[in-house]
Image (cartoon, rainbow, N blue to C red; front, side, top):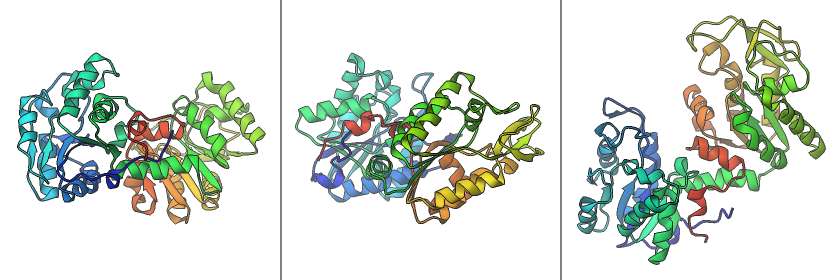
Length: 410
């Protein structure tokens, strides 16, 4: 996949209608936004276009919209928050049709520098239809409102939805530009280049519960990195594949042969594959998840049959931290244990701390690792924290992301 895409700096937006696909999928409680991180992340691109004198038309999805269009998943609270942050009115088109007569009229009335926000794109069921007739029609209606298109929604870039990827076809047909915004550009620069052109040594750290979720990531990263570290619940499947007792620990029995293949592949390629050497074990999983739990530390090769592994131990923390500190590029996806529990967060904290203290380029691949960095207070010490869980995983798998692919090459 070519990663050299046109950005908002590569075309003149003055006086032009620019449709910007943002990620305003913010958490709401009782109609109030509880975390505005995604809105703040969109501001640099929006402000750049306003400054250029563009007519800025914003669109985004919010929630899963399983019950059809409804006020609880309306983008009205986002419009209010945006207006406050931009210091200017944002004209919200609340029509559930998204691209109907109200939207057309609102866009027609725009002056240079004005901002319009369309209603939740998923209120049109066609949004998620893979490029079929319905999705094509909605994509064309979106394109009809604009001259150019900017995708700044990395969290949705792995989906070939109407407002993410299909719309670009119709913008191209009318001679317009399809570019990426600053947020997307940052993701491409960090995640894309880390995998395709890393400064070495390149260390990849993978955690989380299941091997099945990371099959292609493990396979792809083994070819790209110098050292692959595996922690979290999925480490136990690797340990069992080596013939060790893992007690009541999480295991993916269908993936034992795969783990053997990956260990053989690492050896053949001359790559280091590091697994936990000691483990925090308990009688059972904590209930509630953040409740008190008694743990002891045992060798990872000697987990008692009646115990469950729930975090990496202190020797492993040191082993992983040393490998991370010797790296020039580190990509991390997935916690080392049950980080939601204070007793079982020590492994994840140790890895986050090691990354915070290194001079390497440190990239956190969204999802639980990003949540852990934010909750544990290490976010500002990382080079880059991805805004897309699923999208960052697919990037690490080496997949072509529709939202990135659809933008014009430079």
